[in-house]
Image (tube, rainbow, N blue to C red; front, side, top):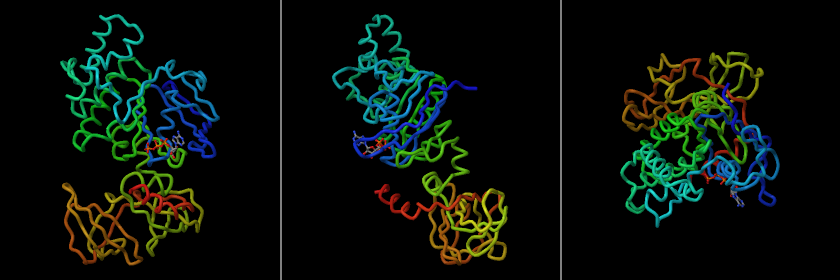
Length: 361
Ligand SMILES: Nc1ncnc2c1ncn2[C@@H]1O[C@H](COP(=O)(O)OP(=O)(O)OP(=O)(O)O)[C@@H](O)[C@H]1O
């Protein structure tokens, strides 16, 4: 079993009357890529700051390598942080930025040179030693920040939305690079983002947060395929979430019909929500469909058409189709019983859409 490096036990963080972390439990194992994913204000940065020692928990235990570290100062923790704004020193060149921590610690000049060269090679900036920071692109500045953090030999690298200032293409490239770097170094990365695609692409393990709580944690595939509630299903990827009622095990009704499914564990007549991902739906002739829908709109997305439609019960559907459709025609909708995911009905979801709208602003 992998070694646990960080543990939070019922960690609460409050600012005056407001709890921004509401009793967080989490376990981080050494050598993996973790992501804290959630909307703005959900408490992701607060968790990083507690791990780094930049702020202290109101209650609960923070354990590092088996020791409670709540009172250990930041400079005594083997943790380094890469911030969103890079926080590089503009008056120093690339070499001096990367060397900074080692210079403070009084490491010998020869060792510093060796380390800086190796770190810059690692982030593909060999030969950039003498450049000044303002001569670098955003992506290069980000790499310098990563090299500087890694030069201190941390056991854990904390990354707080490090890619958010980069344009789309560069961001994608850096996602691969960071993932590859983590695998090569084998140290623990804890990455913060509100971008679900980024979280799915990069992580071994994701913690989905909302309002100071961890709602679900698991591998990207677990979280994508088996979201625990409405919030997670909506936040991670594109979902069709349709209200339904459980008839009996393996039989659920929604959109005015009954369907076989493979999820069990709900009570008969329990109100549920049914999740079907757009890529799990296919269009066919009305006679062959499990449901009949009317096509409302479509857009071309490169390797598929995204189609929106509604059924006769007025549920909206998003469908990924290989072929284009014709607006206002009636089509059959099919899906595999195995792709139906059933969730308990979440009473709090009524205000969920309002919250998501605020977030999307
Ligand atoms: N020093 C502080 N004093 C008071 N409230 C704070 C302080 N720092 C953070 N908060 C509040 O704590 C909550 C969680 O903030 P946090 O920065 O952890 O969220 P986040 O998920 O990282 O968000 P973002 O993606 O916007 O960075 C927010 O409501 C924020 O306003």
